[in-house]
Image: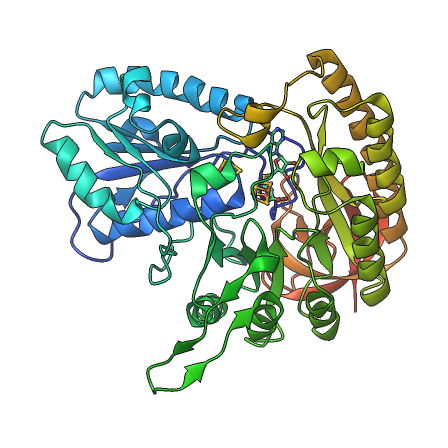
Length: 477
Ligand code: SAH
Ligand code: SF4
Ligand code: F3S
């Protein structure tokens, strides 16, 4: 795992989550659900929708798969190792199922969508395969399995946003929550499987998003992260509301403003921004609202224009640099993080050097870095040969990781000696005598507990020293 502390991460397939014990509000059906999630934050967010749908039908959730009647694994296909991890985990479920033959094992999410009914042939213990747009059908699919059948629903939808389903907050600290604002992706980056597993892009009704943010605030939450594969292309078509009024088109900058206006004490974050789509309007909105965190995840993938072109990213090196310049100009304190892929098809040594020089230019606060992994069915798999040898990909990755380590340290050292507004998220993992929470730029701070303040409140913390990923400080008034 790269960094446990960056909870807004969107795509680290090593994350793993379980449902907390939760009981249905209506009549219990006496059955227990266990759900484990992999992949990006959208998947974690979907698991909360799945849990909500089944709790509504009387299921209780459990943290122990061995005690469960229904075991779900919400999967990721982004890289080959993400899929391998899921297969390994399924093997571990085998003995539990042998002891309890009535146990239903279901595969949800992106791998389910990619492999469809083939999954049932490949993994005999699996009873049900459900794609990301078919979760409303789960109660019905479980019934089919109860009747002795295997069940599959991998239909993708152009409309489904689960807007009316109020997610149950699993593994929550009671302070930060994620809100899905859109689904799918229309971008077709040549390396990426997401458009195939998540379908067409669609934006959720802005009113339902604002309502969810209000409900969270009223329940004590103080931070929301708006989620989408490309939040900058959020666009909700005009509609007529209940009173007959026409509600005009809402773009991402406007949505961000609507959510920021819920309450000045509600922090707003978002992920992921696409370099081709992030507008000055979004940047100015961020600058105008103190409660919109000054942090942008802006995946570069490569610093070389030819590689960006065959990746189908639709921007080049100069365009990306200009967007970074705009961020620095409009929001001087903004933290910037990124994703990098090393060893994409045909990448030369000089082209790789341009990725390193791009990193020097931006000096990212944080980065997720990957060696290219060919995914079946993608444009790159069809058009290009995966011709960079594995050891070269890995060596380039090591160079990228080493450079990022130096830049991360440079950024965090700059925070020492400064005062940070921090939302207290809970006790530090290392000591119950310390609080932890993040600053605007998403850097984690750890500082001694003070009885005058509690979790969910804001404090000013002076950064006094740091490790590579954490600032250590103390509360000042
Ligand atoms: N929507 C986001 C990315 C989602 S996938 C965006 O456009 O930036 C998260 C990250 O996984 C990508 O940014 C990319 O860096 C990485 N990734 C995606 N497909 C990959 C592949 N085939 N091999 C290696 N890394 C990949
Ligand atoms: Fe994949 Fe590109 Fe869409 Fe991101 S924008 S999810 S990388 S296709
Ligand atoms: Fe997310 Fe992985 Fe699917 S990154 S969208 S869960 S392929």
